[in-house]
Length: 139
Image (cartoon, rainbow, N blue to C red; front, side, top):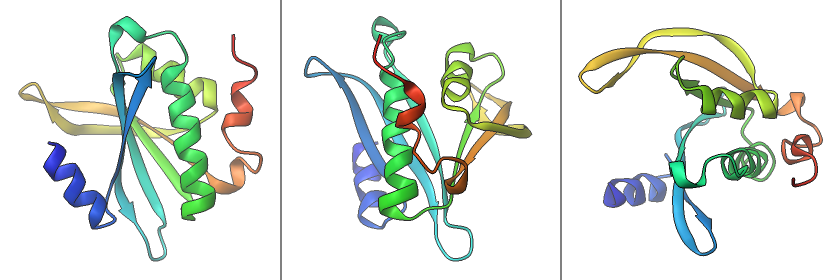
């Protein structure tokens, strides 16, 4: 997996990030499907260890990486696909104000079955002040 991510990153197709807490790896966020031309978009996927859930690690990482993609990198659209039963991930996009754009039926093959996903997006013009500003002060 690491070799594949490094190769895709060198080709400009992905950006893998490690999420840490007190210098310990507790999760990962990967930018996938980076597309240029008239599209200028990418998708985000992420996970965090259950032991570190609820500490705002994931919303902070998604906000930071999204702001980087929409400003420094120059993408126009960020998309996140979430399984309908994944309440924790749904809270992340809700907290950050991603807009739901529909359901992708049988979107990914997971655990031997094709799974539906709810699709969310944010556009550069939707967040002129950035997503980090939407987080508010740390609790």
